[in-house]
Length: 605
Image 1 (tube, rainbow, N blue to C red):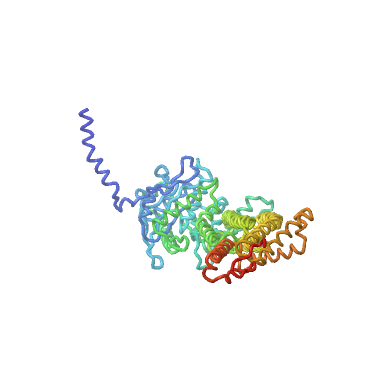
Image 2 (spheres, rainbow, N blue to C red):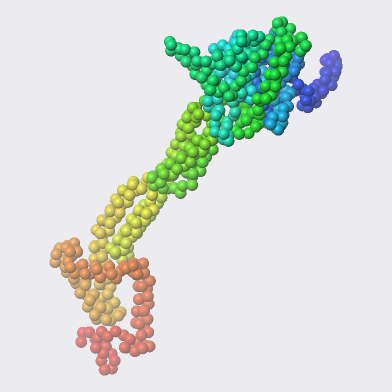
């Protein structure tokens, strides 16, 4: 127990030193190679290495990258050490010295600072895992090749001795990238500028040919009389590479020494002088053609480069096989979202509900605007069609929501108008003073307001409901109208008899009321039913007079019936109680003869 405690106490200073020293790394810590991308356990896909990304993320200047690709054990790591003027002990691990350390993609932590067209640029050198090694799938090699192609500003294709057909086939991804992203109109933003392809042939003798002639010969179309599909595919790559000649160059490099296993132990003075001379020219060539990595129209610092790497890696890991189409989708994703927002904003400005034709026209205009923006800003050529289809699908989804919203708003508005008209018709059915003119006026007003205000896809449905409801309401009103008017006139005649006899005492009013009452009662008994009365011209005259009195655009007697009755009642009461006392008998309507002493003669006399 005491010994364990002593060991723990002794180790405390070391632990504290590690804790306080690890967060604050000095710049010398980055003077080594770091992995930035590693294979997954299945050695089919790639994943990020956070330790190496810190070496890139700290850079504030524009970044350029030089990547070396090539077959397994073709001298890529040694070549990078030579370009960086590093020994094998301090630089990238060399395969014949130790177990291969280059798994995935590695970066030299200290960039080379160059002045490129007046811009201070940090150039990183990337070492890639060689392809065609044992225990790896072709898909994994394709992902390494594709990622190096996308990240680099200069892609050095390191080939020993000669150019094989398999080496040309591996450039298919680079060709697709160039066809998709290269050659856009000058002045427009590009997703990224394809890397400069540098054919590096390590060979002592070129048999009287220049290295460029050797490359041109390798890219010459091969006859395919048998129609071999693989040969056709390689020939297409050859043609595309020949067309891209302005974006590629060729360079030859002799062997540094016959004893290749001892290269790391040799100084420049021990190497072949022709090799040293050509190596220095290669350094100058790389420095002359390299440019800062341009993504979407601007250069990138360390943070932006790492974000770009994460974005590309996600795209390349998507699916079983890395494809240019997946890259196009990544770069077009933000543009798709922007174009979809433009369409959505245009459609949300609509004041729903609208007619189906208006919504369709607005959809056409907004879609055309969104597609125009996409055509101007999208990336890719062939694979952009898929992005266009995706944008169309997203626009259709939004349009379907707009259609549903328009149908809902249309149904809501038309239902409110329908309910309002239904209530109006119900009110007209129970008028205190039945009036056909007032009913017709309300009927027309409801119909007109519905036709003008109800719009959208639900209008046709609600029009049918309105026609049925209005027709039923009108039929019911007409059916009840004559019967209610008849009863009202009978009641009115009896009331006027009472008023004319006992209150107003105006015999003409009493006689007129008796005539109306006798006509209504005797006619229905003589002809057995009240319905026969409704065809009589006298009844038509009575109805016309009634309609004129009860309703007109100026006066609606049904609305003012109660106030008018109250005013008349007050006036009659005043006349009856105070008229004779204040003004004499001349203020009373004459009904009977008056005696000499001023008293009325009884009616029995």
